[in-house]
Image 1 (cartoon, rainbow, N blue to C red):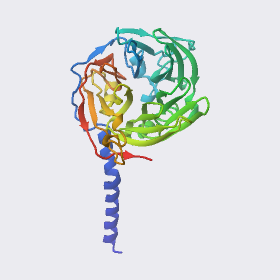
Image 2: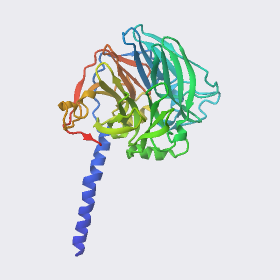
Image 3: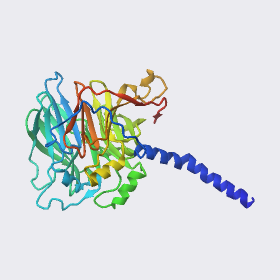
Image 4: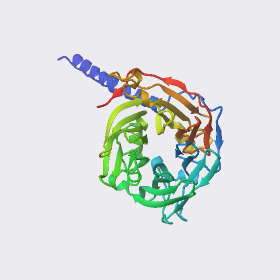
Length: 413
C-alpha cells in the first residue's frame, strides 16, 4: 500500500473516531454543563424569599401533608453557617477539617408549617455531643399517623454516614436511633436518601473516589469527563447492604415509590427510571430521560404524579459564586409527567417517548443560588431552595414553559 493511501486511511480513521464519538461527547458535555446556555429569567415574578435569616443553605427539603390537608409541614436540612460549608463539605471538595477547632459542626433541621407560616428549629436528642451534624440529602418514612422516621446524610469529619432519627409530628424534637456506616460499603460520597420504610432505604453515591483519601483532581476528573462511576446502595435488615444499581454518572438526588425509583444522573443531565422489586429491593433500569442540564434533587408531586427537578444550568456559576458570593449561581427547575414515561405519552404500546419538559423556574438574579431542591405543594405553590441560598423561595401559581420535546427516548432492558 502506498504511503499516501496509508496516511489517508489513518486520517479517515481518526476523523471517524472524532465525529462518531469525541465530537458528540464534547457537544453533550457543553450542553449539560451550560457553557453556552442563555441566562433567561422565568417564573420568578411571584416569588418571595421566606425566612432568609434562618433557612440558609438548605440543600434538601421534603413536604409532609396529612390526607385531610390540615397538616402541611415542610422539613428542611439547612446549614448553620455557610462560611463553614465552604470549608467542610466533602461533596463540594471542601475538606478543611480544622474549620471548627472549638467543637463539632452542627447544622439545623427546620419544620415550616405551611398553614400557619410558623418556623420551628428541631432539637437533636440522644446524639453524641462531640459528633458533627453536617447535613445533605434526607428523607422520611411515616410509621404511624403521628410519627416519622428520618434518614439524614451526615458528612462527619470522621466519614460520611446516615443518621436515623424519630420524630413526632408537631413537636420540636428529633431522637437519634441509629447510625448506618455506608462508607464501609463503598458509599464514600453519599448524596441523597429514599426511605422505603422505617428500616429500609436507598442512598446514592455520587463518585467512586473517597474524598478523604483521593486527590481532589481525581474527583474533578470524574465530574468533567462524566464518568459513570456512581451507584445506589440499598439497605434492609433482612438483606443487609447491596449495590442496587451502578454505572450512573454523578448519582445525585433520588425519589420514588415502592414500585418505581427516579434518580438524577447529574453529569449525564438525565433522570434514570428504575423498576423496583419489593422482595429484595433490586432495581432494573427501564428508561433514561434526557433533560440536558446538571440535575440535583427530584421530588415527586403525589397530587399530579409529576417529577419536579431542581438543578444547575451553568456549572461555572457555582464555583464563581463560592469564590465571590456577589456573583449569582444560576438555578433551574423543570417538571415532567410520570404518566408520560415509557410508552405513556402514546397511551401504551411499544413506542417510547421522552416526556414534555416544562421549565417552572429559571433564575440568574441571585434570588436562589445553586438550586438543589424544588417542591410543589398541594395548593400548587412552588418552593425552591439552594445550596448557597439565604431563605426558601415561595412561588405561588408557577406557569410551566415547554422547553424541549423529543419523539424518541432510550429504554434500557
